Length: 202
Image 1 (cartoon, rainbow, N blue to C red):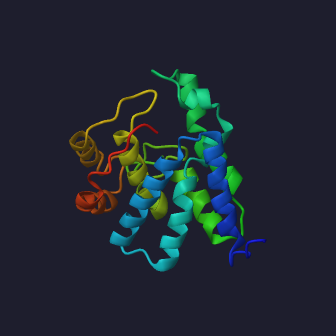
Image 2 (spheres, rainbow, N blue to C red):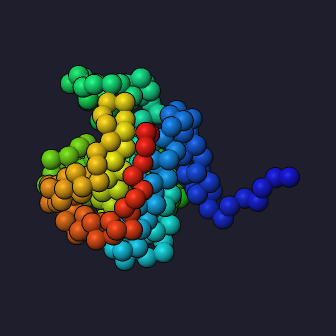
């Protein structure tokens, strides 16, 4: 029996693009789930309306969609990357945006913004556009906080997992540098709810 068509085809497409991320890196699913849950909790704390939260829920799992164009051996390389490899990894923001941009569907419009801008920094030192402050889309600022938090807690091929106190200290240190101060303050205030969910390998 054929499943009923969703009210918004963009929603279904966003969900299928998430499956493409998992097909490229089968271990990435739990990270995407945690980032999405943390981002949505943070969005609620920041007072996002229902439409913004729905867009965030679909956009957050696609923040690294552009990595499907990169070799999995590079993404999981133990040890330090070369300067050339670093630039290649950075390209995932523009690749993800190129895949998602131009859609008429709000879910994909939001995902395109998040994919492009989640490595921008509040002080303008990020990439790929060097945006600063409120120039960075709010959903991207939210996903950036959730993504970094979970990534630092996670064991990766190229690094061990950090302990929770070290991660919290780093999040505070990056306030006003990498992160929007209001967003990271709201996130840190929800940490008791997030605590105890430290992930294992990704």
